[in-house]
Image (tube, rainbow, N blue to C red; front, side, top):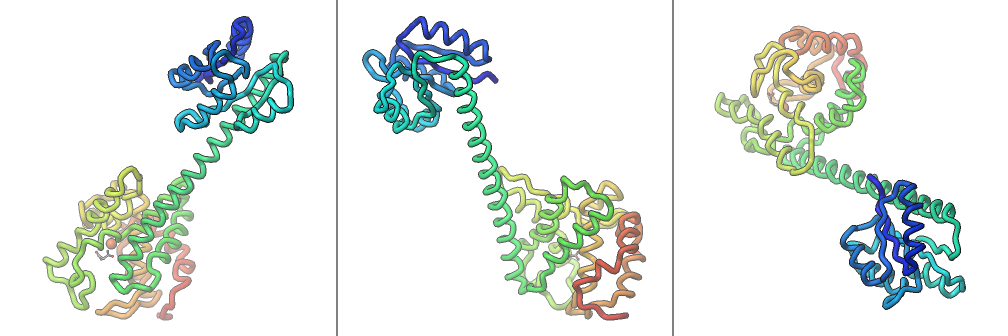
Length: 333
Ligand code: SIN
Ligand code: FE
């Protein structure tokens, strides 16, 4: 969109001539011969820049700049002074008032145009840097919120085994091996971190039960993917990945929960994650069994090929199985 420039100068010939020149440069031009009308036009048109004469009737250009500096909605509009006053006092006053430039009359239009363009470039760069900074802060805030949720769950479950961290790095590793899209890696990481966040909604006596769960308890436990989605979507205005939290207990043959999705209906991220989550569970001590050994685990995972797990992804996992067992204290059997 064309940038809008308001020129305020009491010399009507200059306004006309300069207006034409700047229009040719692609700017949309508004003009005024008077400071107070100029202020009104600033409000009306919200220009991207103001070219401001100093010696104006009623209200000087300096007064106009001073006034607009005090008004939040318009104080950041860049101002270039254009004045016949060449004394150092005037020029320095112009800068002290926070202008972006001071061009003395008579002037060459090329000099003014290059000044206008350089000011716009600087302003645009600043705006872009500010946006990048805001986006970074926003991303960091989201990550801190998610980490807070996960930490709360871990504290509640007295879980300091580093399960989340491990499954994240192994999920990313397996994803790379199957050429998972690079630009979806960050989402995959967040999804893996969030996978069981819905357990916050499962009562203690089920979540930390030492023995086997009753069918009714299982029913509640199996709601954790849905609880995850509710919690994740409660963070308004933030798009977080739900593929893994919602689908990590779906099985390739359709026998999983919460929906019973089948094959490629199950998002790829969840099909990858499910293998790693099961690996991590088998490598961990449970109240009803100690951690299993590598051979035993491979046998179990292989027996679920095409049943619980996507065969193609499981094959890649099995071909590279050594690296997935790294970092665990494993039994040699
Ligand atoms: C889990 O979320 O890992 C426990 C529930 C289940 O094994 O299905
Ligand atoms: Fe789970």
